[in-house]
Image (tube, rainbow, N blue to C red; front, side, top):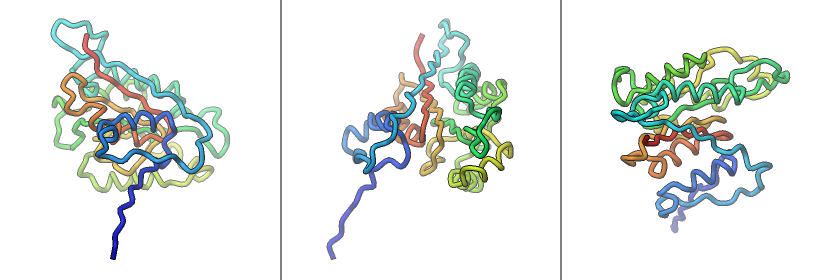
Length: 233
């Protein structure tokens, strides 16, 4: 019997503004990952443009503008800046929300990158996102750190993705609301309206956006991408 291979290349719910960013991935440009096909129905809008937050890498003697660490997840200031952006997007703001809708909750946000979120990673480890999380929480943003091997937590994230909308979802607001912080490989197949992508370091480029971040982090967004990008001073 003759067999056929069919590549599922149509983005699920990412708006065009996000799809264009994902399509810049090195594996798509090089043909290793098939390019997206055009959706059968044109999207109603282009979607919000990507927002960039610059992390000024902390080198000896450099002007870091209040930032610290080489990686964004090692920077409390970056966490504060992202928290301020989430406030601008009205994430977690329940006031004046239409009945039965409720706007975006903290559960609607992923913070992704190649940082280590496992429970045995100490806060002072270079790959721990503890400083970034402190920055978020100092601005009143609740967080949940999901370890890669925590199957129960990942299952719960999947259930939240498929949760009902409208009045049923609004009725559950306020219960265990938190921004999810996880390694980008932990949430394959899951999605959230807002994705905060913490790029490792464009200088070393081992885990840069073109290699993995666009495909594994940005593609999880159904609306807004916030890219925290390291720059040298």
